[in-house]
Length: 295
Image (cartoon, rainbow, N blue to C red; front, side, top):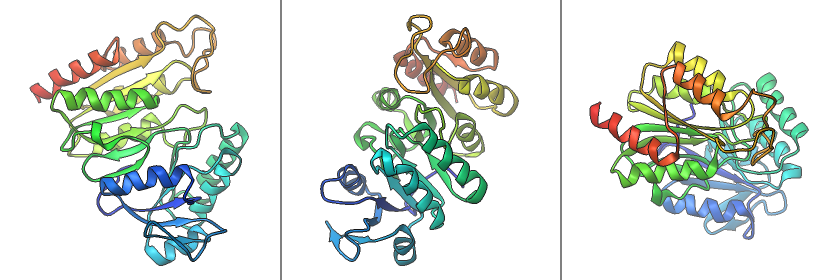
């Protein structure tokens, strides 16, 4: 399943109620132009909220509306089950922004999808979502900070730095094909490598900004993939350069073990793979502007 979303994407909001986070952000997504076709809530099936029909289950919503993406902001104790429900209903793309899902639940949902529902892709959890500027926005990213038209793809572990990267490029008049926030939890449904593969194959994407952070080995794995499979220019930034040694900071995934997972080690691996490494988010935008000018 492609990570890309566009004008044909039809979204069902899971756990929809007038006071839910999904309602607030889902209506912002709809105002942006995203096709929000349904909501789900077992207690509100058969009703309507702000013109959005509500169904008791995702399966009913898919059958009635043809929804092919799910927006999941269900509270942490129930979010993993909501992911599995969407996959069981045949939804090919599931965006989960929920923060604080127990790690065991994350692992259970991830493995169920890999084992039983390989046609469904999960983005997140604990992520800002995905935006293809001017086409579709699923999640909590403000559409106003993103310029459509390409040629840059963005993939980021950090939510806040995702927004900064979008806005840095917009200020320089540079458009984005797709921006993906993969989230910072230990068990992400979509990885850097998944996104890099999509950007490499996408003819509209000519260059990539990749934003990582301390902890784990995802950036080193991405560096190895870049060296072998990516021939498009990549600008990389790794957050956490000033983190005190051995300190846990930010996301649950941002845990450094010995020398592994440090910003320095990640930056060195990415530079060795051929990526241009920035020392701060603003420089990442400046470096990308120079690359775009030379394309």
